[in-house]
Every structure is written in C-alpha cells, then in structure tokens.
Length: 335
Image (cartoon, rainbow, N blue to C red; front, top):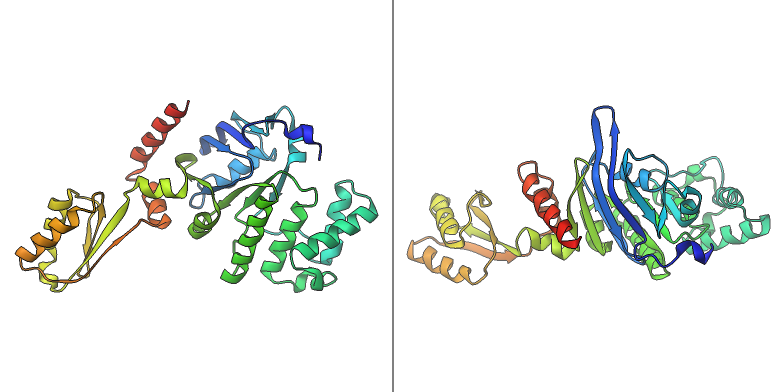
C-alpha cells in the first residue's frame, strides 16, 4: 500500500447526501456519514433500512444517484481505482469457494491481488495462523463451521491490509461464542491501525465495538453519536415500579405521571410501571406520594436505557419525525 494514497485527510470516510432509488423505492435518502481513522463506526438499522446499499455505493460497487463519498480524501467516483486499494469489503455471506481448502482460497485471492506465488504462500500461512485456522488449512471448506467460514472470509479481505474495512453484518448466523471471537478479531484490527465500518442488526455488537453509531431507518440517518450519547437522547434512566396490589395500578400510574411529569412514555401492565426518569431526585417525592396513598410496593429500580430501547425509539414510525428533526438540527450546528 502506498502511503501517499491515504494522505492527511481528517476522515477515513466522508459521505454527504448519498441517494439511491430502485424504481419508486428510495432505498437511501440523503445519508451523511463521517468516520475518523482508527475507529470502529457502527451502522444500525432494521432490515431494508438502506445499510447495505449505502455500503455498496461507498465501496464503488454501486453508483449513487446523488451525493458524494470520499475515502481518505479520494472521491469514490472520480478515483475508484485508488479507493479500491484503500478498502476491503466483507459481506453477509462468505465469498469463498467451498470446494477448495482454506489455503487454496487465500492463495487464489492473493494471486488475484498481484502477489507472487511465494508471497501468496507466506501471506496465506500468516493469515491462517492469525485467525486460528492453521489446523484446518488443508480441509475442504464444505467441512468448515459457519464461524470458521466467516473468519476465513475476513482473512481474505485482509490480504492487502486495507486501511478501511467494511464489515456488512459479519456475525450473522454465528453462535455467541464464535461471535465473541469475531469481536476480538475486529478489536485487534483497529489496534493494529485499521478503520472499521460495521453494519449490524445486533445491538449488543454495536454496544461492544463501536466508537460511534449511526442509526438508519427508511434510508435516512435518524440519529448519530456515541452509544452513551444515543442512550442519553431518550432519557438518562428509567424507573421501574412493581405494585403489590394490581388494583392500585392505575392510581399509581397517575401519581407517576404527575410527579415525574411524563405522560405517553409510561407503560403499566402486569402490576409493573415503567417511566422515563429525567430527575432522579423526584423518586423521593414519588415514594412519599405512594405511601400517603396507601399503595404498597413489591419492588423498585432505576435503570439506564439500553441500546435496544434507543433502537426501538429511534426507528418507531410514530417518533421518527421528531428524532430526524433533532438530527437535522445537530448537523446544521456541526456545519
């Protein structure tokens, strides 16, 4: 890899206003993404949100209808050959040949990238060792587990050690143990200097790995920030109250709504009440009001929001317009 290709760009990836339509379906509708070098950037979204289409445009695999994208300062449309030297792409499903062995697959990829036979052999052996596949190097891939195939696919994308790696749902279908192994591998890549853009539907994956996260829904970025910032955007914490006598549930709910000054976000069922909590000091007032009303508690806890709650809130159609407007305001402030 030529160092001059990377340059001194502030961004590993800078995408502005990306748009892509398929017939009447606007799959990507003005997506902006900014990824700093040496970080893991997560892109979350439900099925059909536009995540993979966005990645394909940035990776020069699909032409955008509008907008621009740059990789380390290089335009993906005007300088596609340079961009392709700077990126590696690993899709949702292994792109390896199951009729060949692990070594044979890596040898083929290495030769296609211009390595000599001796260089390809050395590179293949190094990657197999790095990904814990040396013992299975000569085994046909049809006998590999799903996790082994995914590790080999990732190894193949690293033959040229690209500075920016796109991982499109890399742990889809893997068991929890193998998924954790993949997470460790991704962390090691970033520690060695790589930048990773990760699309995923596993919220825990984004929580574990990503330095920043963009949430995409219906082709739009509806929120962006660190995981903690996104969690904070829907309330710093939530209050969970269990009522001893279910007959008092509605009265207790009214007290919660009045004292915490919340309405539609409160849920009450099965003898339990859940409500967003912006000011934890109000819990004392609520406890006093419940006691004065003769409402006994079976339990109470204060919990920070999970990324699951963030995801459900941000991709809920009833709240999407508010969230999108907040993100638009943030973009204007950032310039």
